[in-house]
Amino acid sequence: RACSRTPAPSIDPRRAHDVTANMNDAEVERQIHQMVAFIKQEAEEKASEIRVTADEEFNIEKLQMVEEERRRIKKEYERKESQAEVREKIEFSTQLNAMRLKILHARDEAVQGMLAGARADLEGVSQTPKYGEMLVGLILQSVQKLETDAAVVRCRECDVEKVKVAMAEAESQTPGLKLTLDEHAHLPPPPGPDNGDGASCIGGVHVISMDGKITCNNSLDDRLKVAFERNLPELREAVFGANPNVAASK
Image (cartoon, rainbow, N blue to C red):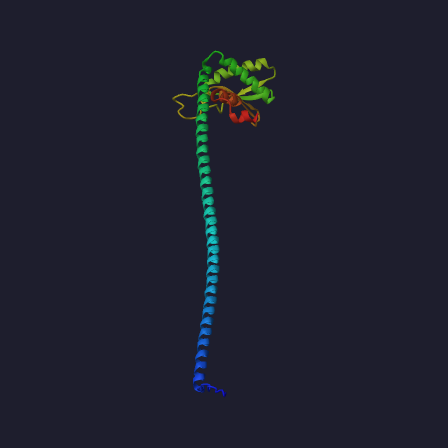
């Protein structure tokens, strides 16, 4: 039995070419889309990395700027605080010194008041009977300090007669002693309304070497001043109390 074959359908070359072209275009477009998607993804990842890096650098820079500003503010605050402390210490020291000076001034006025009171108590000594004996003692003491047997005696003008008697008595007690009364100059007059605010003397004498180079001041004013200065620490302690600084140093 004879077999028959069905003849294969014929293919149009032009149609086959169109199909192949269509398939190639689709593949190319697909590949293009893939490439675009890959590039876009790469770009987005890169952009994300750049953003992250930029954010990190920004945060680091911001922290550095904040820290630097904080240190600057702290340093400025410490500087102003130090200046305020210095001003406060200076003001306190100024006030303390002013208070100390005020206290010292008040104490000095009190001390000078005591000296003036003591001087006022001695003003009447020259009118007492013992004043003559006092003059003799002052003259002899002065001569001994000068270590001489000849001297000039200077006194107040109102004491001339009393001093002459005292000079004679001193010469009688010291053989060889020769005293001369200074008749050209006198000690200041006694305090009183007639004297006003001028210099005054409450009594006593100055004994001067014959060459005039050495003077022994033995007026009652000088003796009071010496005694007052010598006993001033004890007077201050008795009136104002012990000095805590001196006590601490001991």
